[in-house]
Length: 290
Image (cartoon, rainbow, N blue to C red; front, side):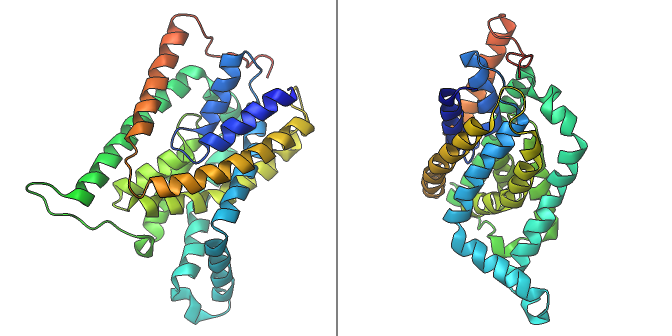
């Protein structure tokens, strides 16, 4: 991998990690369209450490408060009813599904799941799911001619059951094209949470999973065509761009619909199917050398 490739892929990672359009799919597609080798699951996991560092800094006050309350709850029973302490436990509980499924399907994640036809399918299907979830949320928030405005849930109403459902939604993002934020936000909206609550828990829930995945994949970094230097460079690029994107996205979702992302996902999935079907793009483009 050249330094230019690592710059572009780091930029793509930072731009797409927090948007509901799948960063892993875009890394895979960028390489395929450019005629580069597939950067691979290890490169993707390690560069995601950069974007998660952006989450740690952006939500630093929330994270410090939650971690502190969680530790105090281990020895102080009175703290176990504290919302921040409970959030700490819920992040742990919600991280279990992706941990178990990530280890179980590691070979599939690094191989068959990177087929461009599967990515096109997940882009379209999850785009439709996000669109339906977004419409339901909009209906509750605005009401209608014969419908009263319905109050949606905040994170203070999050329990173990919903935390696990969020966790299983996040685990779906092990398949490129699903999108970690897209799946968890869709799940949250379908369960009746506000856009802001679903997005905030989605980003907090991603921290332990992504950091653990990145550390786990460190042993494979530097193998094949992807050297350590370009990988680290891409990770720093992803961090800087990711921080700017998350700041913009958290403001965007308070007033805007997810429909632009829905349209983009479906259009990209359809275009990908057309290109593969016409023989212009191999479903395994770049894999042989990756």
